[in-house]
Length: 201
Image (cartoon, rainbow, N blue to C red; front, side, top):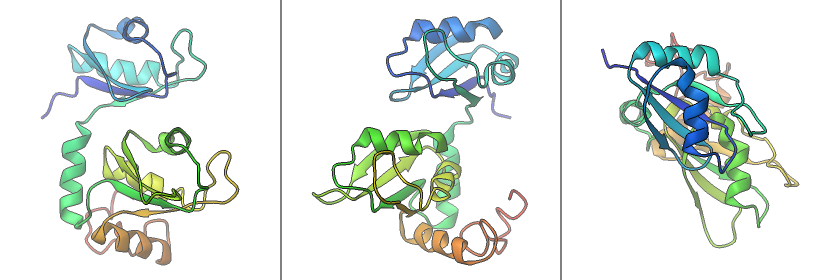
């Protein structure tokens, strides 16, 4: 059993300080560390699992003082290791998606805020000089799958929708198979064939 003493917090305003986070999250238990994960996300570590569970149950959907929007709070399960394990089995290149079709001139911030609800974005890499397509790397494969669900959505300020698919040989084929086989994850990467994701979805 791995001790789940940390929570992953995302959605707070850019510029929120460690002190603001500590003040908001210390009500449920003693905080040992606060580690920022880029802008708008952080890992808050407690000295006990109870405190971390309490943070999820009482502070999910709460708003940090001085912020405009609420935060999402979930147990931090060491996403990197989990994502790598899942990716290795499926033959995908890890938790990455490729986004195509956005307007030239679309900024990294616009892409980030569009896909931020899916999970922790670790990297956005534009492809080619003119723009129009990019690779987004998430912390876990589950988060990448949520981004693929946003296929044919429109980024703020854009005229047309984007196509979203798994990046990488195994993942790309799986993603397409999933869409064409009935059901949300049918037939492709998450299909019942291997049984690995069968029960979960």
